[in-house]
Image (cartoon, rainbow, N blue to C red; front, side, top):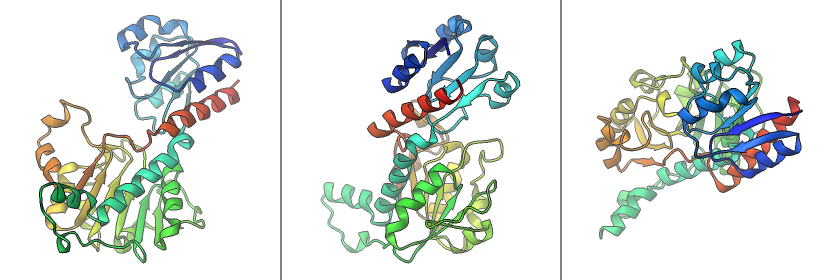
Length: 308
């Protein structure tokens, strides 16, 4: 198949190379702006993007030839899916490419939280040697509740398999997915039994702000909370309130309602969040390793070949 693809973001060259082998003419312009993209997109059959800007109605209307959008990552929340479907534009994403990265990142956050790594490290650097105050927990025998059992949730379950934990998973849109790593369960079981809660769901109109004060209220145990999914799913003030009440023993947040500075620093909850010793923060890098950078492009190239 011949056609033109515009790469507007930083993608591993594996995608460009494979696309060229498939007969596409590829313009790799990772520095291009949205305004510049709007000015030239009419001449392209495909666009590849990571997170730079939204592929919305305005952009798709400016691209009458557009046949596909390749999203270098798992989520499609920066694409107007409904309008793409209306325009018969295929959407390609690559959750297979960064599922191991996300699973490992979530595990790293969890292990750091239950063992007080952040707090202990800060204290020692400030001349404090407090063994009792940094006594941790073991994962063995605990119950880990996973919300969403797609590529990311199942990856987390696999990573947990060597820790002798009980893994239960709830997915509103799937049934019959119990496997060697997790047991399918109801949301009632999640809130009753979980010692750890880990989110692995996409951002949709339904999930936006889903995790709020009422959500945490239903949990019977005090929990460790991990979010490597999307920040807008969680109400940050509710997390802080749950930390202050003891409902959340520790939170690992790779994603936040507001990301990047200066926007993040302007949030009313930022000062309290950043000061909390019970929170570990990372800048939305759970799925962004040196390895996933390559694998995501390889997965996208495979999917591009299949739509020929």
